[in-house]
Length: 295
Image 1 (tube, one colour):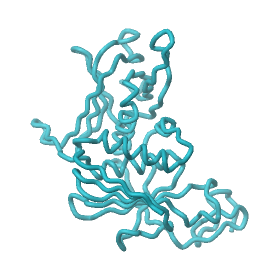
Image 2 (image 1 turned 120 degrees about the horizontal axis):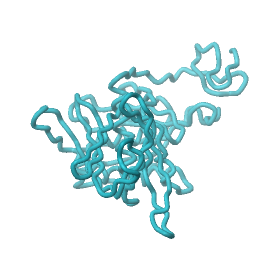
Image 3 (image 1 turned 90 degrees about the vertical axis):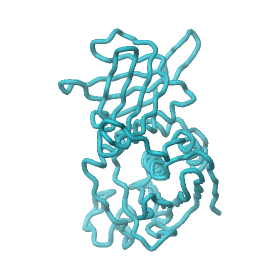
Image 4 (image 1 turned 60 degrees about the horizontal axis):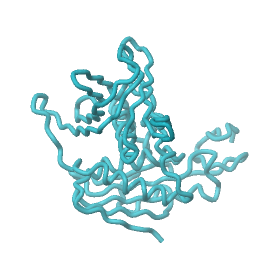
């Protein structure tokens, strides 16, 4: 039986919450498909997920985890249950495969419950809260571009060429623009680093010794700097908000990649089993995408 939770008075953007859920599922090794309300603003999103490739058994090829997000920014209802891959429970509209456009991130490692569904619910609760206020679009006066910028206290940054080993105190700001350029910015006094989202290759959580006996979680960002040089920056963010910051960075980079090249692929429901490994493959396939065996 499915489970439903309601999130009220958060002013959370439904579309951004849905996108973060899709990325989280992909990082967990799922193939993801989606459908959404075609009106603006969209009032519902339907997401399906099934284990990808070799992780998927023959019996589970048609079984999916179904997530429905519906409502408005001030009252969001999220339901999680099981269903049949390719079957849209909300509408007759087709489902589309979500391309993998996120960066290499380690967000999944921050959720450590034994059951996947428990981790998924914790992630959704986190992101609904972290995205609080995103339902109202701000406008950048000069460019006239819709912007969502979120600033986080950052104890220090290290790894930027030309700066001293560690620069203490500052703000890490995530800029999300419609029709513009997503970017990550670090500010400390009069100094500023701006990293275009398209230059971000990966983000990971690392542990450093902040004090004598204290393990501190930090974000390590692999990106491209001026002249194409590789940089590895380390940001010290409060452990209580690091999950939200990581998801935000992944969102910025993923959206940038999607804008530069997105092709919607319809879900293929007409399938057969590979004669060698049993994986579910399109009926017209001549080779298995999992084991390579000719059919």
